[in-house]
Image (tube, rainbow, N blue to C red; front, side, top):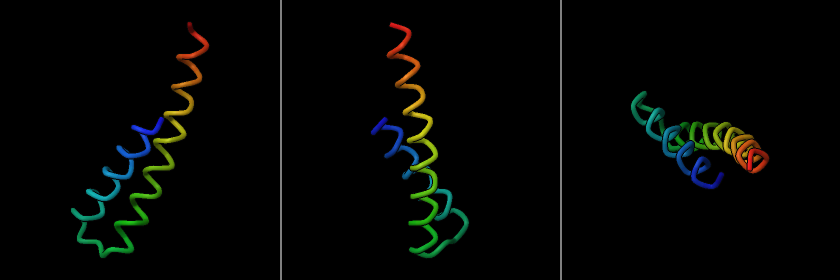
Length: 52
């Protein structure tokens, strides 16, 4: 889950940078992507732990 959090932040930062965003834009994209991928990571962790 923590890996998904950092991966999401990196993806968001890069996407904002490619679009020419300022620091606030990069931080906002990083936070939004980090939260989205963290939620997916949580679900993946729960599914894997229940499967065995």
